[in-house]
Length: 336
Image 1: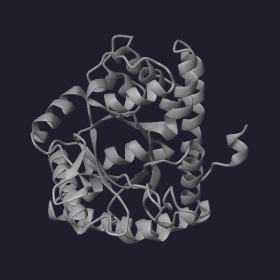
Image 2: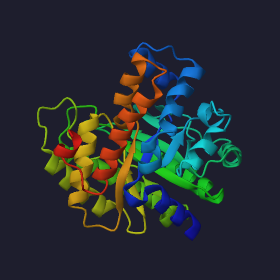
Image 3: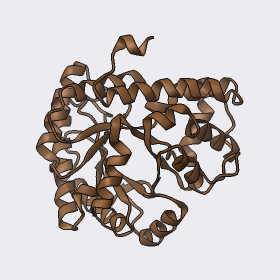
Image 4: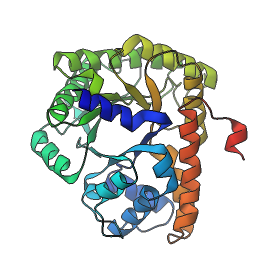
């Protein structure tokens, strides 16, 4: 399995991170609607191709998570999208879950679906050029949640998915996202996140998944978005690192954080602070969607033919996050 370990290290090596461009058609339509751009397959492709062919992509992005629509599209230069990404020195990946549905037995919570027929879909994606995959489990925090049922069910699904992915010679990204929605404290987020991650790894080990060929995509330890008890960025970094140290086996090569509702600047600053105090063997990088794309999308929406200007905005954000993934970012560099 050293081949999968090498691939995981290639995706996250040298401060590089992952561009999460796996928004479903519905989600991408909402984002384009918000900036008054018609959500057509052509426009969705144009925006994504603009990012995929940028200098920031070549310099900073080690992997791109695609959606089913995008992995099958052809670029304006008549190249398949996975080929375009590979030619930029990055690794094409694919989201393979089919979304979070109501969890039977606990209707306030979600279970991620998509295991049925997954083996066959993985073979198809591999032929299309995908080398890694993503599956997201979601958990809410409140007085009674996440429940033991939610934690166990989602961990089992993530493990089954990971075993099938490695069987197909791809690297699974395991994404157990404890949502920041709610009025919980950072300490509660810490406790629940640790419990969720530990259970995920128990199941991964039970399902004989090679941990050296896995990338973990967790949330940072944040206070809920509705609480008055916010914590300083330095404490976010400290708690996040402590949580991961206590719950992630040392064999895992890399951790790529999700941005999960943080602003672009918060996601960069918090990643930088984590890396400044990172005393573990884990690579600590990023797998951002909105926190990499939002400013570029806003700029692009003013004139969707301004490829160069849009790329300049994206290049800056990608560079800032890659500096943060090495603990080298600062507000001075950000505002240069």
